[in-house]
Length: 281
Image (cartoon, rainbow, N blue to C red; front, side, top):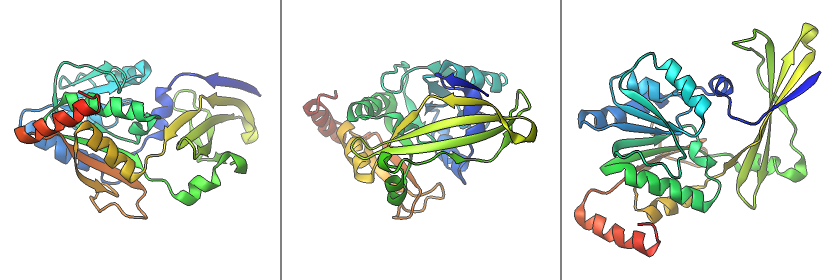
């Protein structure tokens, strides 16, 4: 058995792992279509290989997909099949400058949780604030993990790897057994995923072991997000527990935020003072 280690994001892994949440695409489409009717474009931040952005573009809305990983964007471009109303931009979600503003910005699939520090979080939201049109909307989809689970995966408990469903590699045709291990650090609110693929040969014996770089994600709690939105001047309109727009509750597994950049001049003036006070202008 040989071991291989991957240091970069892999578009194939992303497409294998990423699936739609119930009602997710329809939820985004509702807001995207409303923005499109006003002649406004949509920005998909951390778009990956275009799972959401392409679905929006296929309905006719104008979409920009932003991601830090060049291989993800290359895969998205290939899947775009000549769609002229979608374009792809390589950039950091904390510091991009597209030279345009949008009626809707979305951060799907927990990607905001890659912002590991308060500085990362504020810089990301501030950047998005400057790319939103007055009255523009921001949707962020965060995970809401169970506290019992977070307790079970603390380092002292040495959480084990857990096997997922075996699948066929789309390029090599070999059997792949995925294994995942999560470890949570309460002091930093960081939940790190360790991912391994085992290639299976005859008799389902492991022939190769593919190890991927650890993926740390910040565990975001509700009022932490409230403070972040207030700090950058975004108005929280709602927080949902799922894409069917049920209210966020104790047993919700998702935390879906809908926020708005104010368009009232008086409100903007008040907020600008708050931004200056926080050195965010």
